[in-house]
Length: 227
Image (cartoon, rainbow, N blue to C red; front, side, top):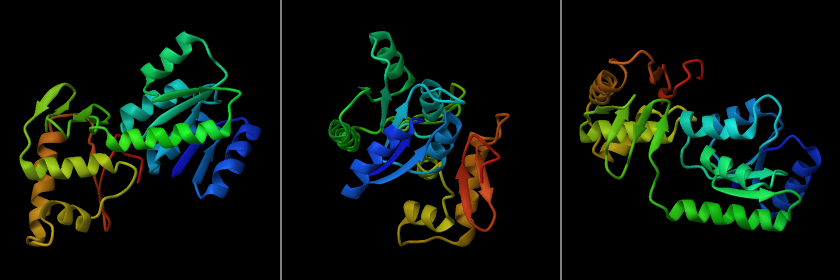
């Protein structure tokens, strides 16, 4: 599994690494809230371990922003010394999926992380959220700023793929394969669908979400400064 550990205590981070990495797990580390949020939004992880008391941006806010600005699917385990019920409830309300109180067993941590990943893979997908854009893959309902968006089947496929991959650029080839499989259309057809999707998702609103990355593909992201 690929794990992002957002923890400012070097000893705790080292203990997690010493236990998980020899077992073949891939770990990335961040020691501040802003750095952790940047990694969480730009990379793809199976699960995130998130401390609450972080410099720059606390773990509660990191989790809230991750859920509102990026992935709504990646499981988050809060790792903290705060063991009061109100603290746990606040963590769950911020979007955390599990809570482990320090001091803890790294073996228990691994078991909990694996359970979160397994649970997430078997559950019905949650609503995808990027900024004020929401899309439910089950009901096929899309809204932006509370306004219902009328989308055709191809537009929904494009939107879902882009929303599931906000951490990276999606190539034209990926989009075409996702929509049409091996029966690829003429070159301009995808461009026409992107244009029509923008008319629905972006044009009526102040902030543009769908960005063309010239020579690479497309990216749906709430932060225009991101490549």
